[in-house]
Length: 188
Image 1 (tube, rainbow, N blue to C red):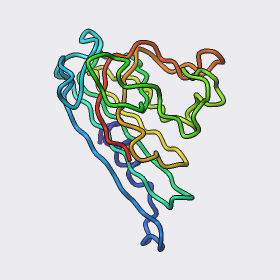
Image 2 (cartoon, helix red, strand yellow):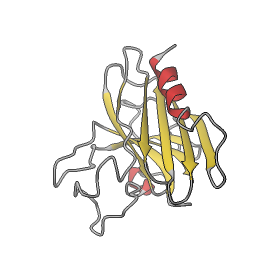
Image 3 (cartoon, rainbow, N blue to C red):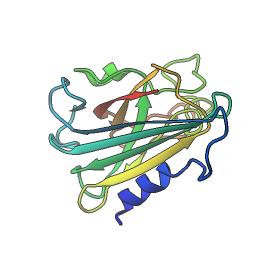
Image 4 (cartoon, helix red, strand yellow):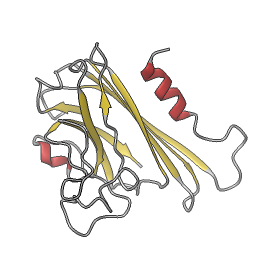
């Protein structure tokens, strides 16, 4: 079993094995696409040198629990990128568009009143969905993030692949360089 398959399998097996109790819900969203140079499809690359046209992306989101005690898991798998390279990735608020900035800011469970958010009290992996990963020698990589909340309906619309690993220090928290590629994901 590949590392990517293991990450995907393990992250989707988060719900309890027993039958859910009354009020517990489980939903999932899955998107698989090829990155294209045109923003008319599900996935677009803004930098074909770092995210080649034709490389692949898969995103799976699984929500479970109740509205008060909900959790969300998001899995990202990339194939055909540059080998042995670290990329940042985050859930963003708007869909992909012709320009990298069209996808809006990072989705935050508790929104920072100051945007763009670089305050580590808000820009952190407990309040945002961070999906940084390092590709293997074939340019493939996978990662999963789990948060203790549900994404608000209609407020998270894409996953953006960034230039490098996400910073955590004050004044730079949440930043990960240029937006290299974007995939539309109706997270809800």
